[in-house]
Image (cartoon, rainbow, N blue to C red; front, top):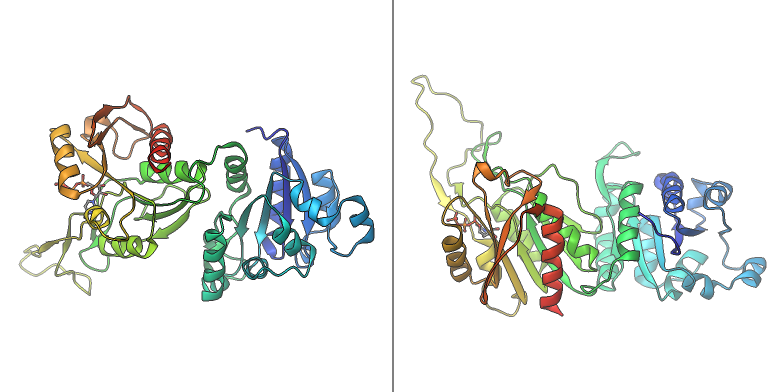
Length: 400
Ligand code: CTP
C-alpha cells in the first residue's frame, strides 16, 4: 500500500501498548506516509519522545503551552495540517476526554480543534473497556463519526483475558489506508451485517452447526466500513479475523443473534449473510448427555428458530431502508431465491449455489446472483472480497 503524500497526526496516549506505536509509525513511513507525533504525559511513561522522533523522522509534540512549539506551528494548525488524526493506543482517559470535549492538554485540544477524520485504536484493561462509562463514551464518539478499530480480544499484560488489546499495527495501517484512500459514500450511515454460522446447543458440550466460515459476511462488513459506513457485525462462531474498523458483536445461537441485531438498530441497511440454523433443540440438556445402558440414542426435539431476516424486514419505524438477505441453495436456485425475497419481505436477495461441487461454502470464491424487485443480475465467479466490494458499492448507491 502506498500512502505517498498523505499526512497522519498520530497521538500516542498512555498504556503498555504504546510500544506498538513505534511499529505503526514504521509501517506508515514504509508506506511513504508523513507522520507527526503527539505524545501524552501518560504515553511518555511507556515510550520516549526520542524513539518516536527517530522512527517518525519528525518533531514530536508534547506540551500545549510550549512557546517554542507554538512559534513553529500553532496547535490549531497542527490539528488541521494532517489528512487524518489517529489515536493509537487510545486510553480510556483520552476517549473520555474526547467524549466530554475536554481540552486540558495538547492531545485533547488537538482532538477538539481538528476538522479532520479521527481514528481511535483503544487499548486498556478488559474491565475498563467494558465499563458503562467507556461503552457510552465510545458510542458517543462513533455517533460523531469517529472511526474505531479494535480492541482485539486476548491475553492482556495485566494477566486478564478479554477485549482490550490494541489492534495489531498492520490492521491499524489497513484501517488508516482505507480512511485515507477510499471515497466515503457511506459516511454517516450505519449498516448491520450478520455473518457466520450459529451454534445451537444439544447439551453443554455438543451443538448443531453448519459449514459457514463467515468469510463472505466479514468481507462485506469490511467493504462497507471501507466506504465510510459505521458497521455493526453480528457474528456467529468463526475463525476468520475481525475486519478493520468494524464493531463486532459475537454470538452463538440464533436467539442471541436476533437480540444483538435488534439492539444494534436503528440502521440504514441490514445485510443478513449469516447461515442461521433453522432449528434449535427444544429440550437441550443442562448436563452432558450420557450413553444409556441399552445404547439408545437420545431423541432431539427441534423447534424453529426466529427468522432474523424476516424480523428485520418487517415494516415498522425501525426497519432499515435497505434489507438484504442471502439464499444459500443447492438446487432450483432462482426459484427458491425469488420465493425467499417475497417470503422474507426483504429488498434484495444475494443467491448462491452452495452445492459441495461449487466449493463456495467455506471457500474463498463466490458466484452470486443479485435478485431485486426489478429482476436478476448474474455476477461472474470472483473472490469473496470482490463480491463484497461490489455489493457494498450497490448498497452505497441505494442509500445515496
Ligand atoms: N435467515 C435468518 N434467520 C433464520 C434463517 C435464515 O436471518 N432463522 C436469513 C439468512 O441470513 C439469509 C436468508 O435468511 O439471509 C436465507 O437463509 P437460508 O438458510 O438460505 O434460507 P432459510 O430461510 O433458512 O430457508 P431454507 O432453509 O428453506 O432454504
